[in-house]
Image: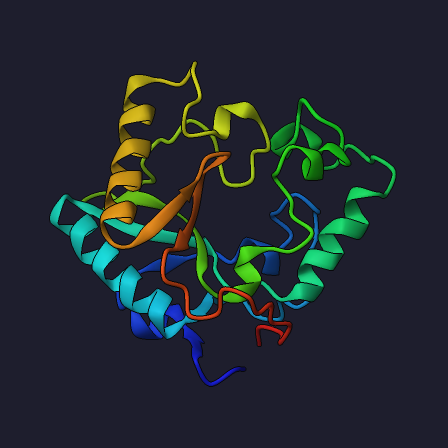
Length: 202
């Protein structure tokens, strides 16, 4: 692993994580190339910013659940190959009910070069510290649908409020949102803005 990359849970105590692409619970339906361990990795700069996010969220009664951080390039290549394979219906209803696989690229849900591979992006949500329950957001991680956008209509007021709370906390702590996905944020001052890494997560 690059010397400037670390396990986020070692640097941001108290975060929860579920590295979806290291499991069978993701839109490909199986563990993704390069994810050999269920851990979240990111740059030290990302972790420093997430520590501020965790503190600010905790002051409001929330904790952080991380789904993805650094993503090896080989994982992105795996996504691209998968998007061209015949539809088997295994994950369609949950993750992309209203589009076909190739449209994931056209609509911006899957990128040929991912900011995650630079180590400065994170997928996350909030949970209630008092109960451990996830804050309702109006759709789960990697739901590739307009309902996942920050300006989506048709979600409940509490879901809109929680999305706005997450956005406010993240932007206050130095992150930019991605309009298509309420869970995806990129560090504004990422240390490797032009480098796409490929070491596996072990």
